[in-house]
Every structure is written in C-alpha cells, then in structure tokens.
Image (cartoon, rainbow, N blue to C red; front, side, top):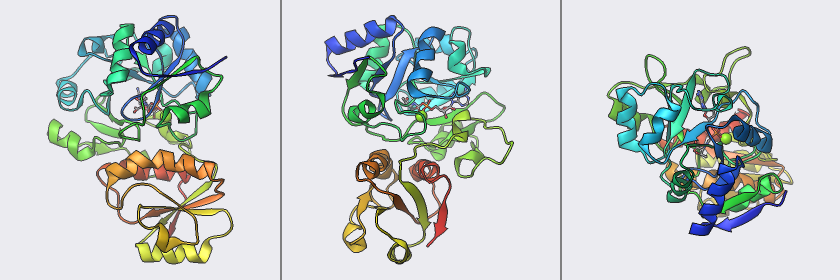
Length: 341
Ligand code: TXA
Ligand code: MG
C-alpha cells in the first residue's frame, strides 16, 4: 500500500473523512501524540488498526469525539462526575473510562464492559471527527512497543506502507498521551498520568483520586492490569535505557564511571557541555514536566537515529504533577531499570 503524507487542508480533511467512511485507517494529529484512527462504531474498520500497529487484541482503544452529543454512542451511563471533568478539561488531553454504551464496536473495548473516551483539543482532530460524523477509535500511531509519534514524520517511519494516509498537523504540543482516569468503579482511579494531573482531577472532583500501582511499578507475576496497556513493555527505543537517580553531580560521576562507546546521556537542556565527551540528547528543562513531556518521545527516537546502544536517563526527585507522566514513560522505556547514582 502507498502511504500519502499530506498537510492539513480542507481537501485533505475531506479525503481523510472519505477514507474513514469507507472503513480505512488514517493517522491524524492530536494535541498529545498522533493517533491511528478508524470508525469506532465499526468492528471491521477497528480491526485494521490492530493489524497496522501489531497491537495485542486484548488492549482496548480510546474513542475520540468532537462534540458531547457523541458521548452516548460510547458510554452507557454518564455520571455527574464525568460531566464535571468534561466541562473542566474537554476539549483536551483527558480520557475518561465509563460503563460501556451499546454502539461502540466490540473490538474497541477488547471484551471489557467499559469504554474510554476523550475530546481532543487539536482543531484538526476535531475537524476530521466532525467531517466523519462518528467517533474515531485511535491508539497512538506507533508500531506496538515503540515510542508514540509526536510528528507526522515519526508516523511515516512506523506506518509507511501500512495505511493509506497520514495528515500532517505539525508537532504535537503535549508530547505524551492523555491522562486516563476511570470513573467506572466506586471511586476515581488514575490509570495513566498525563498533562492533566492527579491534583487537577482532585480539584474538580472534590474527592481523592487513587493512583494505580502500575504507574510507577512493574506488575507482579499474575497480577491483572486495570489498564491493559500498562502490562506491555512500551515506548522503548532500540537503545537500552537506564534511569540514573540522584543529583546532577552524582549523575555526572555515574556517567563518567560507566559510559562506554555507543552510550548516550538523556539529560536536561543546558547540561550537555558538562557531560562531554559523552554524547547527549536533551529532553526539556529540569523541574519542568511540561517541557520534558513535550520533548521525551522525540528524544527517544533521536537516540535511535544516533545509533545509541545505551542511554543514561537523568532523574532526580520523586515525580509528581506532569513529571509523573514523564517518569511513567521513562520507566517503561527503561523496562524498569533504575540505578542509584
Ligand atoms: O493521547 C492519547 O490518549 C492518544 C491519542 C491518539 O489520543 N491515544 C492513546 O491511545 O494513547 P493508546 O491506545 O495508545 O492508549 C490507550 C490506553 C491503553 O493503555 C489502554 O489499555 C487504556 O488506555 N484503555 C483504553 N480503554 C480502556 C478501558 N476501557 N479500561 C482500561 N484501560 C483502557
Ligand atoms: Mg500507545
């Protein structure tokens, strides 16, 4: 299959919508990461997403809506708390898990009795959904296990020959996937951290939000993932990533002692000269989760482009706020390898 890469224009949006109506898969920009979209109400269309990504069938997909009127197609029951979150954070990088509604395709929910939904803030994403007139199921547009794509070129690197069309809407602003919160149980649970933080959710809900244990620790043998995506190794570049925890001076000493040919530092902006001669890829500013999130996945892809064999990722404090989202992705990229500096 020939994969076309097109800048977003009224014509390319119309072409994307026409393909999606025919049951095809199209990659679209969102504010978080690029998505691999198909009609969320069609099992046949959604199966093509799993095939293009090489995604395990038991990992459910998020349905994307452009308007609240589409919500009842996905969710069977919409509690008041969900409406409050929607009011506060939609359109935007928050996914809400709710009891499943009747029209969403079985393969989107992967056999669960819940469904996940978000309204993206990226105007191009909403324009495509609105032009279709139905919700779009869309996982991140990477091959399963790879870092999520934050540019159309990243999508092309993984999806060339696998899908007919990629819409290029520029670099994604947020850079990590949406926050996932479940409102399907008796209390809210944060399943995946993102730009919308635990504290943001608690402020709006007025009740504590439980942090799923899978966010910062590896699932134990036999433990069931509440969010199936959490059980897979994820976001991994080809390089072996090792998180090195400690102050900058301790990190620098660790790198000096351990770096060999092919090793890189995954450090913060401005630290490169102090780490020379070890080559560096920087991901955002120290203490600034927003800039780290924006840069992380492109930094992981850059390590591959540089041919890195191993990368020492710098981390200092306990992660909270948006940094929790960054640390969660880094841990998975590192397959939970953490060294004290
Ligand atoms: O920012 C995002 O959310 C991006 C863009 C494209 O919108 N999408 C995305 O989708 O990250 P994906 O499929 O890569 O990640 C969805 C995550 C997975 O970890 C999946 O297991 C979880 O959400 N998930 C989806 N539906 C769920 C459900 N009903 N119950 C529990 N977890 C669910
Ligand atoms: Mg993904």
